[in-house]
Amino acid sequence: MTDILPYLLERAKDMENSLIQLIKAESPSTDKRLVDECGQVLASEYSRLVNGQIERINQLETGDCYRFTYGEGTEQILILGHFDTVWAQGALPIEKRAGKLYGPGAFDMKGGLVVTLFAIHALFANQVKGNRKIVFLATSDEEIGSRTSRALIETEARKSVCVLVPESSLPPNGDIKTARKGIADFTITVQGIPAHAGHDPKAGANAIEELALQIVDLRALNDHANGISLNVGRITGGTRVNVKAEFAQAEVDLRFMTKKQGEQIIKQIMHRTPYIAGTKITVTGGVNRYPLERTEQGVQLFWQFQKIAQKHGYSLQEGLSGGGSDGNFTAALGIPTIDGLGPVGDGAHARNEHVELANLPYRAALIAEFLAQNLHT
Image 1 (cartoon, rainbow, N blue to C red):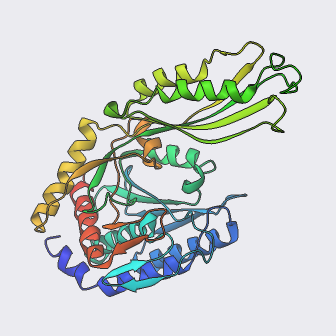
Image 2: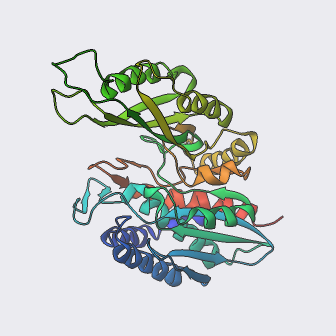
């Protein structure tokens, strides 16, 4: 495998064309037809590049998922990706400018899918196999919470010695993610007692006022120094300006660094005591994704990637992401997981979403050499 990087550099244009195909196959999470069409493009590219098994996993509501297998063995390395995007069809143009490819999903995470395809292709073309197999699981609903694919992800993870996630890397230098924050979501509902605001100001119980007091309390739970952030992102309530509000509601997003930390904060969020007599508070929700915590096993995976990068003549660093991915699920099961293996780029979920085309062969070689080093028990 000493010649793997030159081999992939010679295929840089093929990688670019493959990425353009995937981006053109727009795949907004909630449009099953479009997501399925994108999945078919991905499967076609795998079939073209690798002589491996392809299993299409049917889903009723979301796009179908795919399980691509290379090699044989009772043990496996799992590569975990998704091909749905946050963008509505036609929302972004596809453009190539100054060595960068812009478009919906370019960075999150179709660039990561392409470097994975070509990493496995490099193993196939160079006849590299071991007594472990590679399973590349491509899912269709990550951007909307992985509701239908989570069980599939966790089943595959439990069979794996480690999990590689070619999600978008950390800008601007393409750092790998050895940690991701956990995510929890809550809805806080306040029930008040309506009354005329002018006839009898002391009557009733204003749900909006109670919610405002609760929001001030919640704000105090922020602890940025320790990685805890809480955001009240949406509020609704009331009917008319001259009526004390009978109803008010807030939607809350919580990010946290460790499972223990999250559980402590969640208890405080769930147990709310009203300030205003006559109001009643209900809190629903909970953890969506536990954190991908920085562990010794994860750091050891990172060191392997770092050594490969050094051999190729560039520096590779690690970092933390405040957002979640499907890697959070696998890490929570205790499976060594490393994330952010996608190409250098920027603009995830933003109108400037792009990848740096020159980096594609380097990222593919990084993954390919790691796989080659770990295909034997």
